[in-house]
Image (tube, rainbow, N blue to C red):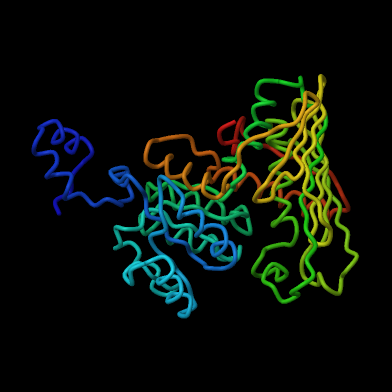
Length: 379
């Protein structure tokens, strides 16, 4: 097909009847934005583990602006099961070897990378080079360097990049952001954020293998606690000190079990976070000059719950994954805000690396420098 520039395309559209014929010949899922011609965007899930199986795929049955169009898996048996269950045509089913052929598939607009952390960078970059928009599960990668590589690949390809940070689309988290933005309870003074669960069932799981995970509790649940401290203050931290504890070294042989960290913020607020694979905790609390607010639980799928010094919070809840993926699709289709851009994922990995550095140095304070508003998304 002869190349058509955006300017010439717009000019042709102004010609009336010829516009429909021209539009009918445009690819609906090209990297440079013509996917906006679609009413619903096709999503391909890369990696069909428990999160894709029990959260993302069911949510994509209810989304308004995107739908489950394809899958990428290394397990042939899953291909058949998913194809039958979700009516996925054979041409939309890929494996890790032939993944790059996804470039030729116009049904797929967004690739959602839901793989072990060490594979995030490779498949996010390959998806971008294939001209597909990218959602990358947290953590973004296993190093800041890999985060930069993902961001650069998406920019070079002209595709959108979002993080799988579902909480930014759900109402309780949005309320917290609003409290901070509008100073509903005055200035935030202190934040406590805990995100943890107890791992007992499978010592062979990939999350306990540093080569696959890039870390332990910190890169898994700890990202939620870091995020909570940031959106509960509305600022990026300027320093962090951290400590690591282990009470089950025979189980957590290769990854961190429990980590605590203390943040300082430019507005004067301080925060303490705790994350663990050995205890259960799920809470965000902030005390302010004129009151307080709390989410407990703060990061489970549903239901969340919250209260403030003015009374309880009560919001209608639905699948956070549904809201998250619809918000990203609207970002592509209608230039709506990107609530969790790639820069947010990179910022969090900068903090993760600083926490590990502090632990390695006996808890020494690490200075953090971010450009104003960097990685904050839409507050």
